[in-house]
Image 1 (tube, one colour):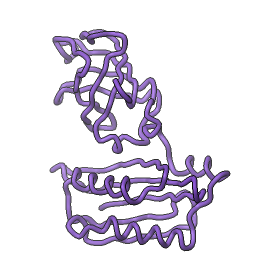
Image 2 (spheres, one colour):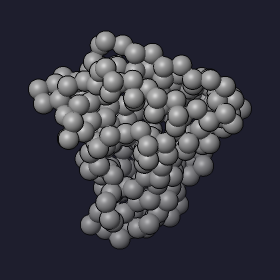
Image 3 (cartoon, one colour):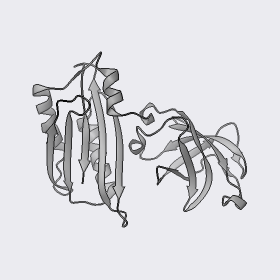
Image 4 (spheres, rainbow, N blue to C red):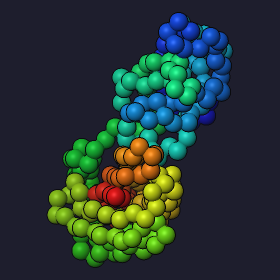
Length: 227
């Protein structure tokens, strides 16, 4: 498998345990489940050609919508594999291969970068605020935007968007596209959380971000909140 994100070790449940009757094979696409949500993924079985019910196996995994998983994983995190509502395997993360998947928070980030970089301020921060307004304020998706600036370096900016659109995938894809193509600096870390209502419509989404550049030796941190 090329560029897997994680290695997980799972027990494949037997039919008596509510799992599968038959093995699965390389290229299997069971739903990757953690933090109460299912996600599309592809699996490669390590050192084996099939994973039989009742066996413990190690799997390499590539996730779809990779950004939604950034900042969420550490060794030992519990995960499951599902087919619809049925759980077919249970286990834990053993290695985080994609460094962007590694668990992080703004305070930890800020404490490790200040020796080499300085936070955005002055004209730099004013310019960045204009970028946020220009690239994020889509009138089909949002009713308004408010940007607050803070002195504390662990959260320099908070960008609040008042939503018109309630479809999670539409809002998520727009925010990620603008971040990836227009807003992040050379290097970045993000962590996205969200809440859906009973009708599976978006209630709130929050993206924590840290981004920095080698040329200017400056960084900016904060969060984008949609509600």
